[in-house]
Length: 225
Image 1 (cartoon, one colour):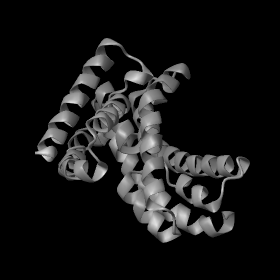
Image 2: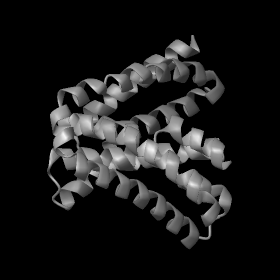
Image 3: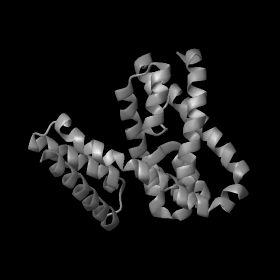
């Protein structure tokens, strides 16, 4: 009964958050951020523990597989665009992946964070399954890595498009590439709402950036800790 309640609660809250996002556009009404905060508060008030909520989370997470695979459709439809910009895309993905790793390391070193936190930050910009896989290789804390990844995705979804607007980056290919490289799946969900090209490029960038990061981080990690 709790599982059904939790599923209905999560879906209802997400649709409510989407409604508010359209009516009152703001980083704070970003659907993923707002719905997460509301669900957490309701579960706390309802005294439902994470362990009780977990079966509902597992059921909904299972649907991420088909949702992710469906991103292949717009990628295929826009394959000529990928071929046209292949050089710029690969360069941007490589530079973006290296930059986000370097930024995390510099921040961690600047704040004198321990190895425990530094390891988690290095993979914050790739999707959770890949990040946790890399975490196992570099002996990072899996729970902490998952939290960093989700927070990074939320920040990307909340502020990514606005930062691109601020820097006057309006080309759909460039916008999708930037958001997918830095904010993985959560950012891609927002990119899809901008347009088919942005969503397709963001989905492809998310996957390729994860491959780049899985090669880069395990190789350099022993030199930075």
